[in-house]
Image 1 (cartoon, rainbow, N blue to C red):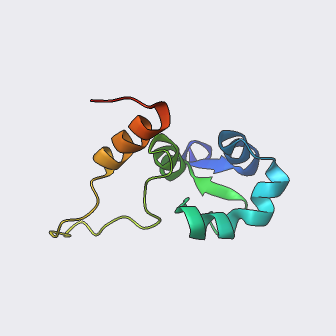
Image 2: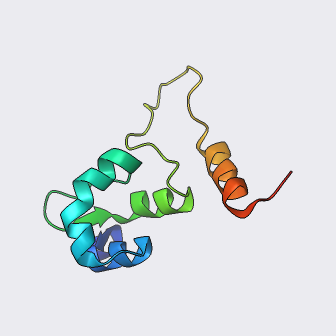
Length: 93
């Protein structure tokens, strides 16, 4: 079951279109600059669902999710992902 919950270095690097060696060297810098999820401290593995969500949002997800009780005007993740796709593919409404 845990294998389904984590994504290894090879899989994450492939999803990002980068070589595993690059991903291994630059994981922290990439996390800090892009909001990509942090790896799990046990090794070169990442939480699969967090990586999938980040990839689906075209990198628009923040590194830390908003607290569940956040009632102020925060980031609307669905709108951010939609805007990123419109920008990437040049679609208009």
